[in-house]
Image 1 (cartoon, helix red, strand yellow):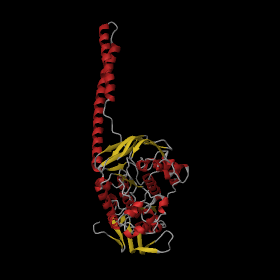
Image 2: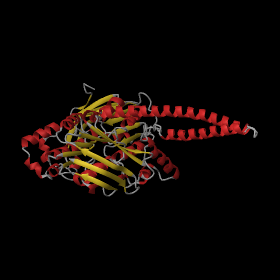
Image 3: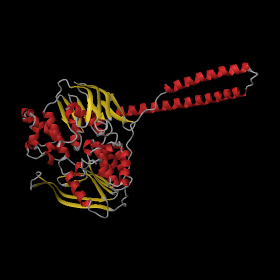
Image 4: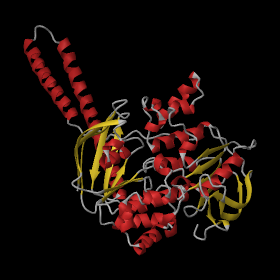
Length: 518
C-alpha cells in the first residue's frame, strides 16, 4: 500500500508551492489518474514516490511517503539519455527477472503489446527506435519485473491505436494498483476509477488538490455542475444582498435627513430618531456578517488562452505538396551504413487548406516520413512551413530559457514573448527557467508558440497532442481545427483525429492508404 501524509512540495528556484499538505492512500486495484495543467507537479509527484533523488535537484519536500514494501514499476515521460545508448537486450536484461520468465509467457506478452519477440535480443540501440517502440520496450521491462504497483507518466505517448486499446484493457483489468498521468482523454474515460486533480490558482500562487473516487467523465461533469450551481447561488445571494443594502441605504439617508431637519425644540422626536439610528447601525453589522457567510464564487484555475494570431490563410486549392518516394528507408543502427525499407511507393498530394493525419503501427516510419516532408517543405518559398517534431530536443536547446528561444533578443521581441508566454500560463519565474527544468507539457506549449510566431501557413505536427494535459487538449484541438492553413500531422489521438483532421492516411509497407474505417 502507498500512503502519502501531509506532503508539501516547493520549487527550489522560485519557492512556488506545487502541493500543500497533500494526503493520498492508494488501495488495491485503484486506477488513479493524475490530472492537471502543465507544470503543476504531476510528474514531480511520481518521481518523488519512486525515487526522491530524481526530483531533489529542483524541488524540496516535507511530509511522509510510506511505501510499505511496494515494488514499483516506473515509466518516465521521456527515456533517460543514458539509457538511449543501451541496446534493447541490454535494457531488458538490466532486471534479473528477465531470465526467470518462460519464453512462451514472454512471447505472449510481446504479442499483446505488439512487439516482435525476436527483437528482445536485438543489438538495436533504444535511441534508434520510434517513440511508440520505446514505450513498448519500457512496458515490457516493467511487466517482466512483476511490480506490485505501477507509476506511469504518459504511457500512451506515441502508441499506435492497436497498442492503445491493449493498454486501456491492461490498466482497466490489472490486479495491481496503477497511478498514472495521461493526456489521452479517451484512455482516461475508459480506465480511471479515481481522480487526483492538481491545480494552481491565483496565477500559480495557491495550490489546490481534489481527490475523489469517480470515473473521469463523471468527475468532469459533476465538477462542472457543482461549480455552475455554486456560482449561481453566489450570484443570487449577492443580488439579494445588494437589494437589501440599497433598501438599507435609503432608510439610513431618510433618518439622517430627518435628524438634520429636526428642531432643537423637539427633543422627544430627536430621541426617537437617535434610537432608530442605533437600530440601523445594528442592521449594518448584521449585513456585514451576512456578507461574510455568503456562498463563495468558485475558483477556477486560469485557463490557457491561445489562438493562431500570426497565421496566413492558404488559398483554397493551392498545391501544398505533391510528393513521391519510391522507398522509405531507415538505418539499421545509429552508425550503421545499412538501411531497411519500411514502405514503398509513397505518394501524397495535398491541396490547401486540408488538415490530414497519418497513422500506422509503431515502427512503420511515420516520424521518418515527417522529417523528409519537413525538409522538403521548409525549403519552399511559395509557402511558409513550420515543424513540430515528436522529440522537442530536435529544435529546443534545453539550456535556454523560453524567452531566449522564442525572442530575437530585442526589447520589443522579449516583451512580446513574455506576453505570449503569460497567455500560456507561464509565470514570470518560469519564463526565465532553463527549459530542462520545465515539464514536457510546458515544452509542448513553447513549441506551439514557436509555430504561431513563425507566421506559417503550413504546419507539420508529429504527435501534437502528446504531453498536453487533458484540460489543455480541447483548447489545442479547437485552435488547430480553426487553423486556416494546411496541416500535415502524425497522431494516434482519437479525439484529435476526429475533431481536427478531414483526411486520414495509414502508412503501410505498400505506401499510404486510406483506411476502410476512416
